[in-house]
Length: 401
Image (cartoon, rainbow, N blue to C red; front, side, top):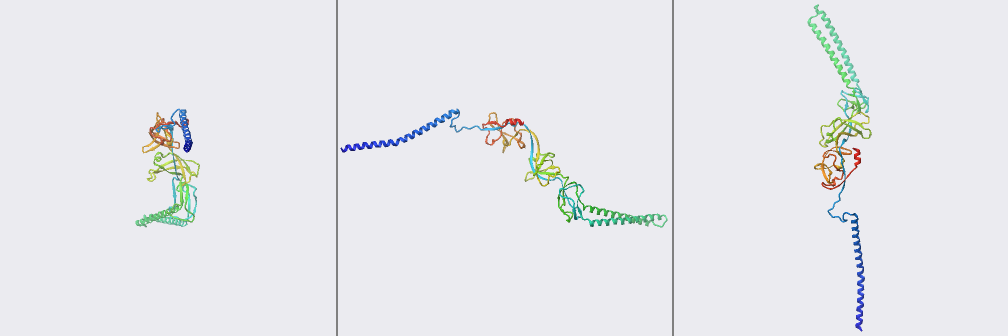
């Protein structure tokens, strides 16, 4: 009886253990089945996407490469007019400093102001000449004395010559009277020369304009004592002519010519003045590698010396292909562009650039104009790359030509 009880206990424990094992394994099987179903669904979705596109596998090979699309232009050949932009300082073309050339003196009055137009020989100021006037009067009186002595000496000689034939006057007396007459005449000429010298000295006290022009500066006031060798009292622009002094680099300096026209716009003004290049610097500054170009301008009150101005100088015209600046690259071998050949492959073409304009750069050599030139992003390409060319603004470019 005890044996049967033990057997029944063992069977009951066995049934409980089996039920526990089945209860723990069922959820795991269910999770594996769900994961397998999800994986199968993903595989089926990828296959459907692949067959719907009808091209590449959704998992492309690692050595595959997408063909980039690039913008190309065929520049043709057009007339390119170049212009050089420059800035500089306005100045008088011919400056005339006016100062004292005589002994000077005290300034009585100043007759002109900066900005006045003066004519040649016009008095600019008055210097006190009271002492010089008295000296001139004294010299004039001395002339009269010398002239009277000369007349007396001539009269004595004339009377003596009438008495020679009668024997009252000897030949020696005639010679003495002749010498006296000649000396009197010489003293008269000396007095006249001295008088003219005084007049010339007094005339040098007149500070006058050496030529017609515009008074730019005045550095003298009434009551001031001035003398020769001092600083200029006035600065005059001869003829009122002005100019623009601008620095240009070696390339631009070689491109412009004397006689070429330029459009000059003073800073702070919307007026444009037409000037002409009248001088190019014969030397280049060793530090800045630039030279001075002088552009002559007509007189106008709006042109003020010392101010700044901008200029546009014509650089001439040429017939050549014209490309945007983004299409032209450079390296240690020089300037070049990338073109697309008949097989849509990138090729390098060395070029020589010319006139630079606001809308492009002229290509002097290296292109005929019919090539398909990559307009931009050339720095991201290499020779031999396959590309998909797309023409940029074909209609607009054809209309402009």
